[in-house]
Length: 611
Image: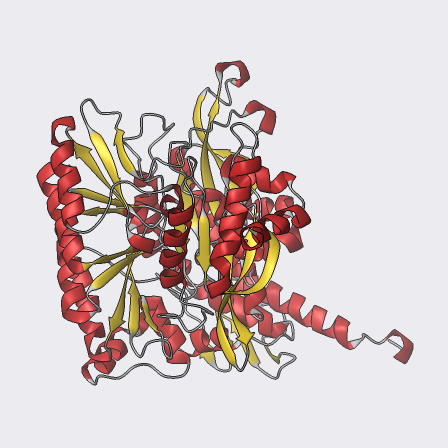
């Protein structure tokens, strides 16, 4: 080859990566490597292939299920790219094998340091300094269903080893805060003795699998989904490759009932739909199926999109496993901001991605035209608060209001007693940061009402509190720009004192760009920031409006920037008051906000100040 025909550096890197990939594929299959059995990649890393093994810098990659993640890292290096520091940390130390280290650190009353802070999150322990010099622990409660005896035990743990309270998350899950370094081991042992687990609830893992919280008791649901969330949970725990992701991952099942599981905000969403007899045939009998949606991440302003794939309930878990493995192999391991499933889908397109899933799954997936599918909308935005009939004869459930998702340990014990004495013994957590007690007899409703009020909680809520969602905020999270929980309670009180409203309005307060409170899907979303005021920096918020999910799906649009919290309440009062004055009959806030221009909405926010 002449000088004019020599490969460019870019071509050399491409060929190096291509050859490496081919060699890896043969090595994984146990076949002999054809060429380049030992070579350096573009970064100087020694790559050795042969006899069914791959070594990087002299370290043999395991033959077990976590191998695919390590091969993905090696392939990234072979392409001349640089792993981000989190990937290097996972390469140096398997976070799943840190149990003894975490227990020893707890006995020495020490918090993790350096990259161990990140790796310890794989066990559900978050060192949240400087917001608090303590751990936060998040659990895994598949489908959000607990038993009263477990909640009693968790309340005791909160008193012994945490802050004496428990938070409900937006994934129908529980977390503890203010855990001292020397209590980490007690928390890990304690939750396991209650048949619970925290493994994989943080770090680069599949988070708590959510489902419709009324599964099995909803008169309107198409299909039960809590059993599927549990099966998915156990699949994850028993497949170690499910812990090799380049970034966190969310999976949700929605049964088409009254309370949304927000499946369209998840990386994988399974949405129950119906095939009617008029659209059925031998290959697609009438009945209930799950529509497969992918790529939801509202913090990055995207919802899960329909793939055109329709699944039976018994197919969902294994297909989800195949999707995760494709993501493990192909997700970005160089840039954390681009390491979510959405960005693989954006780069590949859905057709290429589903083709790869079919190869991984070993079966062709059922593709169905959208016109053949019947989507139902049974959602009731008040169904997670107050007393409602179940589909079982003479049984009711009650949605209990928790102030921005928090309850004291004494309140938790009271709720467990109510569930045992008057209900089925179950407690169901919701994505709306409250809980449901099912199985109540109609004759016992007055006693349940009194018992809930006696423990300082409520079963009725204003339209503001029913739709109020807030993340932990700066009181317990180093990323947050404001004390969102305290601000949310103060804002709701101001709104209630000045307005009466007959429809639910969702106000979501989130502390940072991670969007744990999903501000982009709220009727009104507030994302915290620090605002300069004189010589000081104070809590403030950017305001977005017009978000929604399900049938009203949409990303909220920016309205106001950098509003100090002390000036926020009158602006929101003006906005909601303007809606009440100018709405059309039956018009929801989201519909009103979407037909108004930004200028019109800003005028409404000022109206209260101009009176």
